[in-house]
Image (cartoon, rainbow, N blue to C red; front, side):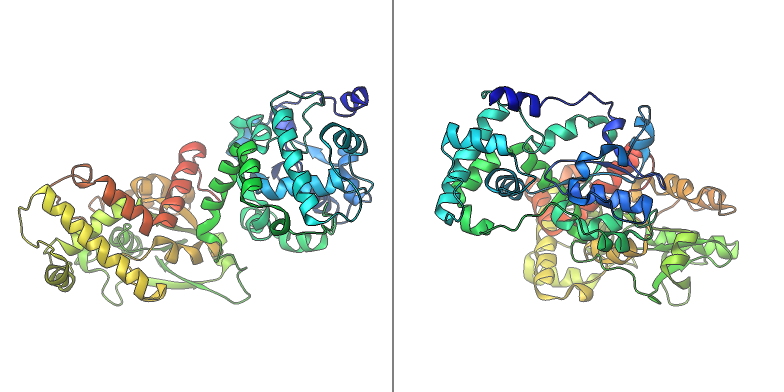
Length: 503
């Protein structure tokens, strides 16, 4: 039996990183299949997108590899630069149970008959039909213990792709910088990722019926207790970490992924006569952006740049998603720590014409805020904690749409921009990145930027680094965790690819 298993699970012919990726004949989309992580459905989807019909084999598409298209051997750089290169990750516990029921306990045509018999003899798995949840629980405990040994190369049976770690598969294409999706969020994440280049992706996903799902006699909750879950997560610890990272990356958009409806529009600042549109979020270069657009439109500066937010000073457009796609359309995001300190110095501690003295007065009365010039670093730190406490209370008490835009989470403004496909830029590299996405389509843009070098910022007696403490940093992270995840994703994409990510 062991000899047969060695032959059955022999290693496939080695491939280059690019050749491990599936692509489409029709468009440059790249997918890394990971077994037991939705690969049956996705392979069938890729076939459907190229042929406008389902594969004849359907559930057995893995046995017909020549019917799918692999990337070429030398395409690593193309894939690395592509915003449409991805892998799908699955919760390790769900993947383990799928393996157990589909390939080990189940006796269907796609199970592992040889390995079933081997494990029944080797570790005492009870494969009797109709066993109860307690017996399944015991089977799963024995199986995960065996997998721990197998994945450490301490059994006679070779490691099989169906239970090999997802992280191991990803390491084999480690230089390709893939976007990680989650299987449980695939229905909305994949259209967000590929919607621009595959407009019919939603219809295709609905049309494809083949996925390797077996009806299970019990749910995960019936079988997996805390101890078994801990074992699974220990054996697949690297997978768990990658899956959770992917969850955090997509979390800001978890509730904001509905498809743009026919006739729906988004309101953007624009410059009449130029194909440029933006969502300008408070404390993220908003004053600069509006002055830039004004100068582009009127060929002269606004008479009072810091007061450009007065009614009627800027042009607006109501745009459809199609309008957005045809023009230079973007929004800007900022490091939440820097944005908070800008709020603190410009609007709360500052006393200029654009400050918020009524909030400072309230903080002085109720939170011990020191609203005086020339205060110490320690007093600035205490002020920051007071302001964060105030903001936290506002978050607890007010609906998102009612929170002041100067401290509202960036994702609350960005979510609609993401749905409409506006490109994300980061504030610290705004001019450079805007020129890249403009691609020469906006006449005079660079010279207009050079004419507006100043930003709406107050002088600061101390640097952020001098004031920031671990406590302040943690509170900002707690309040603006989704903003931080969004900022890191956009910043990393620009740094590694030179292009904005598709959110």
